[in-house]
Length: 119
Image (cartoon, rainbow, N blue to C red):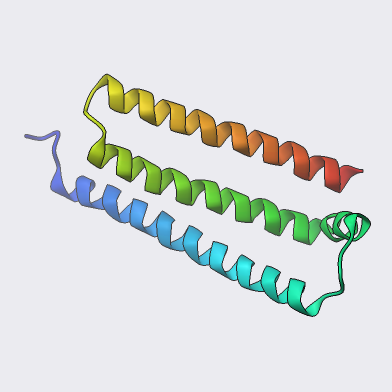
């Protein structure tokens, strides 16, 4: 019975809840600023978008936005799979595939952001 400490189990749920709330709040704030910028700002062409994202502050804010999005997706997807996927190998495979999918998207995004900021 010592392995199932109810305090640590509740703390794990609280930690997931906090990650969901903080990442969701950052996503919401970023989207509000982005939408206001699109509505108020000038019409953009390709060169304008490149110039916009070459600003290091916006590049970091955008990177943090996608990091928050991936964290939010991981916590939510993990909770869904833990609740509904059969225990054992099927759940492990589903979690591993989901993690690899998010990791691949994150690497692709990092490549895009680095290309825009560096060039």
